[in-house]
Amino acid sequence: MKALMKTTKSVKPYEVEKKWHIVDATDLVVGRAAVVIANVLRGKHKTSFTPHVDCGDNVIVINADKIKFTGKKLADKIYYKHTGYAGGIKGITAGKVLEGRFPERVLEKAVERMIPRGPLGRDQMRNLRIYKGSEHPHEAQNPEVLDIAAMNRKNKVGA
Image (cartoon, rainbow, N blue to C red):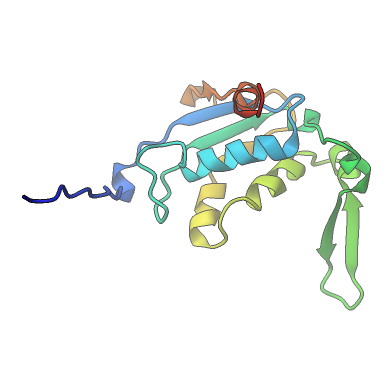
């Protein structure tokens, strides 16, 4: 008797169908929102997920300036960068970044650090658009609403 062969179908780049999703980041926690957004960008929510192909969807995030941190992270979390000169390490708190000119960088960095590094990760990050206000220029793509708050409530232990 022959054993049943189970094979995994690997998706080709031209077979991928990309959708558009929109996320309202008002009162969402940064890390919990970033996990869901990173998984959608990678395509892990699809049954046809292939690790070496960009099979993820496009994500639009609005109201990124109204995102929240838990605990004392707003004052204690520090983002570091280096100027390239000796002793040139600089740090800025998450609260100052959110109050500053580009508050969307907080969520962008959180998602970027959950995506694999390399050419594929850079391609997947190009599918993320983050806006600090509620206006965005992607109405023509008819994005579907991605309710992250409901997904987090569903996945919580004891709920």
